[in-house]
Length: 307
Image (tube, rainbow, N blue to C red):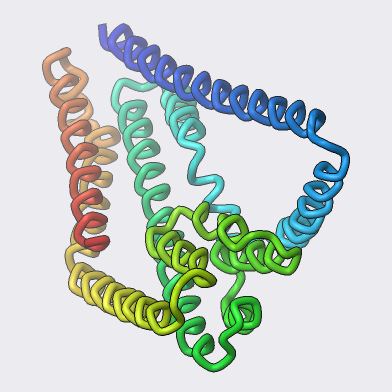
């Protein structure tokens, strides 16, 4: 009976993994169709327009090729953290390898919960780095633009102070487009595509720099800088205040894992939980409550830290 219930759990998780893989395949197919439509559209454009677009894309592609040669370990880990299917498959594989009434649920729960927490941690670090680089870019731009009054020169000087990362790559793409005399509204699109609210607002501000009074532009830029600095200060304070809570949560999670392993390995506890289906379901329910509690606490901590 226990093995039958466990096989149903494995089948359910396999179905979830199959759904996620199918969704990923559909997204790839949609990207391929979009690329084909774009290719056909370019083929029907006038020759001069095709040459101009190809020249612009060549400049951006060369910049992207240089960036891909120097991928940082953090960027690689961030990419791997998005593969939730890998964590599910690894958990199911570990459960099948143990093939034990108690060790299999423990291994499955620990790997799934640990994978989700690791993914959340990597995403949090990525967003934190994005916040810091975006704030640094805006502060550097705000301090240099009133002196030079040149968008390209100010962005060039500002990006040189940034470390390698998503914000620097997006800014360098903007500079490559601006140097090819592309319209400002189109040139700042990489900043909008970075997926950061402050960068999107900064890109909108840069897009209207030619049509906005300089005094109004400088005042708006100063307000944006003050908002960014206030936002970073609040984030720093919230992270410091939540350090103790986060550490306590980690200790409790380790205690739960140790208790689950003890119940699986110690003879008396093991005999109690495998004696009948009721006790086994109690063990699985406790693992589920611990997993849901971990997810809930981590979600609350991330929300408080972001707020």
